[in-house]
Image (cartoon, rainbow, N blue to C red; front, side, top):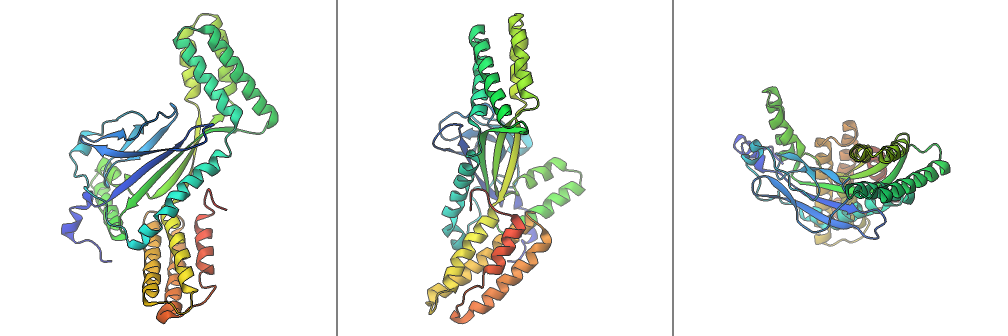
Length: 367
């Protein structure tokens, strides 16, 4: 695809529109609650569906278009800067290819599987310790010191059990959030947006460049909240003497400070990889079929082309090692040549599948 013309480049700020979903897995819940975030007039972000996550659920939100990024506290509406509101926001996403649309269910399943896989690592006693800490804070707000002291004692006991079982454990996972940034843009547009951001940086317009670059992500982020076992238990134990001394306001401040020390780790799954693998799987099934129809030959060609575009998009977005992409494109060329004219065969996709695995590593929620 040719690069945008100068006239088209002037409209880059309305060229890309990411779709953002949050799958919030509440500890000890048997289901995931899905929430979709979308822009509202004035540059605000609001939760479109009901349900309240925990106070630790905070995500970085991509605003509509290649422009603004804002920190969104789930359950609250945050205003974007005035410069964002004045920017040209997109009215619609760039159209996906038919092949990419066809593998969307696999992309959605990957997010769900990633959440399920990570949720298996949560430690029940750690989750309960956080709940007890929050209960203690609530009790102090209501001036129920006896309830607060009992909750803190229960939290301390659960933390001591965790440490006794595994003295070397540094982080105890308690909560998982899944955030999906789904960028619907072709490689030419991403390239042009990147060029525009570089021009802004060269001109000293750092914030303009930041808003452009903020949308250049297409991935699943798996955020895991963890208790830092080296500091959190001691912080909780230090609250009881404050309550006993009647220093309730100081105790509440220290409790909130302890809750704010949770460590968040992030695993990233590039969506172009997920789509490329799904497209190649479809293409392999067709390539191995003897006596394909014309429609099947056309579908095979479209799948290979779409997989190539996903790899190009992945490279432009900076996922993986740049030097590894050329060999994969060469493999796609080889497969296209081998399958041309209705030819079929097996083993043609083995090398590129290994290349993809080596490039990005195994995906969460698979295997």
